[in-house]
Image (tube, rainbow, N blue to C red; front, top):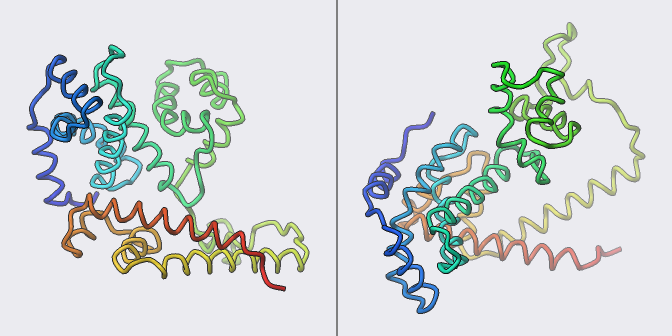
Length: 284
């Protein structure tokens, strides 16, 4: 496990020491923000519940994510909660914010856990975050053992086929196809063991050209970004060892929140540029 960044440690201590809001104060602050856009009220409301982002982030570290990045994602969820919260609906802001914080972190984890997209629908999302706990219950004999996939499917109320898919995907982290097969006396790697689907040469070449074209559009879009945004995109998304928001912020002399804002703007610009470029037909 990586050592915790000193700045992150200080932030956590500060967040956990913030004031606890009573329901009336919380309600008044939420009203002041909703009705008058009182930024001081918003800051106090969010600061008071930053501890929620810290608490929830600790639960998702087992997926191998940086605690610093998880807390930042939790703070994003906290901001969205403050923007959407209706203080007249009767629910506490803390309850409402906790849902948005978890949703923001889950989205981040699923987006970064593996190079292969893991969860693509509601059933797979439920499986991704509850499979391990359910398997432990199964091992302890707490659910009927009519078969692993069937037991999990019944417990989580998802299709058995989805359970089998997720069990396969989560059986291990990404494995290189260039690793030598342990049961092969000739020392062949897994790549050589893959079945040849017999793709026609023409189709294979066209696919390769299209991939090259799309990759070129991506790198051209990144290259066109302002210097700081280009550096952030490269360090965060195009590097074999992605850097944290805090690390980049320290090098650039800006806060990690500012790094996050620049990253989001850069992603938006790159997405727009690639979409525009994709509309232009390939020259004959």
